Image 1 (cartoon, rainbow, N blue to C red):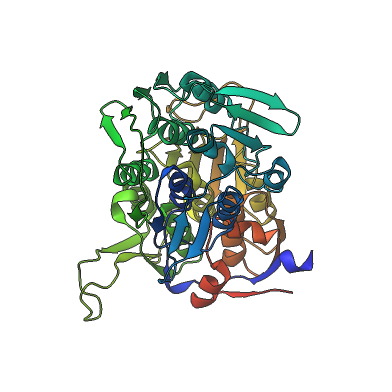
Image 2 (tube, rainbow, N blue to C red):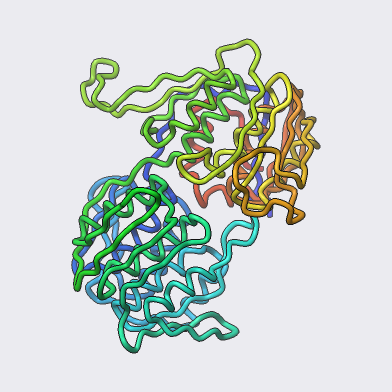
Length: 451
């Protein structure tokens, strides 16, 4: 489709200022949480991305009134009249997102039953929902699998349970939180994910009336309550988008100020950025900017000139180096002097995008071996999950086809850094997680256009 192509004239350093809003990986879950309340919820700083549209549609199918608030980016969700949606209506969203699985707990509490269609999302390796289903059964749900999806019921209500994750999965932790808050009794979750987005979701649920204790060693305890109420919340900023623009500044030898980016959520990334040779300056909200007290802070990222340095990195769960940070950063590492290593420990098929970078002149080899010491989910299981990047490489233009969201932005960065004109196909997939990215590119001086 010609309207899903972006023509990128590369070789120009990106320079300027853009803003990130609420985190994609929190906003959609906050919208689901609104189902649990008995009064309207109000969410601020919501980005205009495809995932928000999908979740809005799913909520509206179940009788939640979703409207825009008075402020730009404000969303009001009224769950007063939650009702069942038809299987056919829900199936319209089949394959477009993995969010529907998280509706199970809230719908079981509100309606006593739920239907989940076939799930979609990015193709970066199997993300099994087995633990989601098993944990729902532990809470007392009955799950019937059918060709069109899964029907769930809770004939005796939902009750607290003792659960332990085999891996600190973000999605599975969210599932337990959204189900346990109104389950009768106490739930204990061990080996839970503790990402900033998880902590922000816990903050939202506490605002709604939940009783949640975060213990040491990844243990979360939830004391069920009979009812919850609406919330007002401004989500944490999107640390993935912020890091993506930082990598773009490094790869194109530019300077980008990311308003809204927050140091506390990005400390691991910022350390790596500096280790490579990038420079950054952090401005807090409370610091006056241009004489305006209280103006929004952020982080400025730039390439200081000179050589970038190679690094050895491993992705990991928080507080480690985030898996969603690696693809954009690898593009920047193609410009570093020496041999860099990226060991992907979270998703087994997340290095496929490097093949396109090699066609552009990069020198990247991928291996089945674990090139690092971080515990890996799939070592010795025949997955190409370690990359060795030799640089610096002069990138040249190519025709690129986007395979998934984060790899898509990495391909876009590569096209911006390359000499010549590239055609990037499937670019609308980037809209799933990057708000107004074409307008932001224009603001940064990028030469891009639609055919």
